[in-house]
Length: 212
Image 1 (cartoon, rainbow, N blue to C red):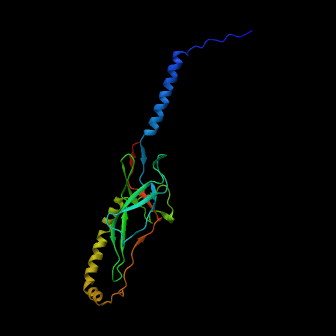
Image 2 (cartoon, rainbow, N blue to C red):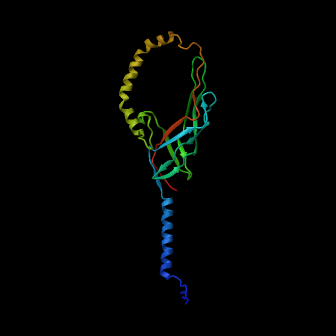
Image 3 (spheres, rainbow, N blue to C red):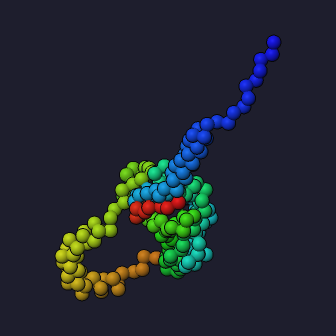
């Protein structure tokens, strides 16, 4: 005896509409999660590796300094700049070595980083007194400019007193400086070189909301 197959019936309309609604709501939630702004906070650390040697003899003002990001820059759990990104600093001072033991001088900086959405992230170098024991984490405490200004104002009277003391001693010190023999024996100065693969650490200097 064969059992008759039940005829196929379409699902109830309310079930169909409910499924469609759930699909669109979940899709909308995913889109919002992917496009919500994230906060990149002051003090977050970027680790960079220099890609080529630069030295005071061959470098020129404005030359590009190529660097590679060695770890992801993350904001609120979202990668805003992936590891391996190529960045460029700029040479800000380059003076070759000269006669009479005048050593070469070389300076460069990376003021800001351009993200894919066109926003700029301001950065500053992390100095030795900012990072205790040479350990660099994902975020550090960046000294504020305001603190430096207040400190300078507080020490202004001391600076003025020191200046008056130096002026008073000038008649004695200038003749001594003129008669002192030059410490250098005609040796040519040494060039300043920054070697390829050296690592540098920078910190975000201003909190920024990043739109995606």
